[in-house]
Image (cartoon, rainbow, N blue to C red; front, side, top):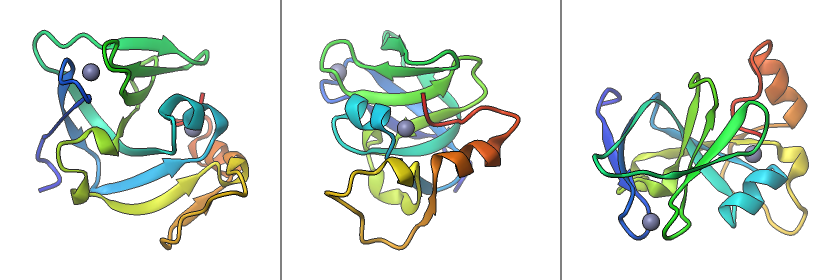
Length: 144
Ligand SMILES: [Zn+2]
Ligand SMILES: [Zn+2]
């Protein structure tokens, strides 16, 4: 079932998409940029291919030299972080029509997590430095 395209969209429905998740696992990013951008904690699913529905034109904000963030210009929903070169896309788990198909397995930039919250689930936790090292020489796939 991992090769099944899943449907998703924003709060108002102006942006609809389909995506092919790499796995049925979701991770969260605790970095300050993701928290501010998502208005919470960015729970994301790595996807190999994301296709916008016909007529769906999301906003794109370049948040770093290599990363950009995709959102709905009408309702403001955070939809996706991706590499500008298209090599990686992390789609918001909560933007999918059925987010319950994903298992919560990892937390990254744990060193940027504020002390006033934490998740009880057992997950693999990585610091920002560990994430950068893991994806070297590629740049961090979910930060910036
Ligand atoms: Zn919308
Ligand atoms: Zn982040």
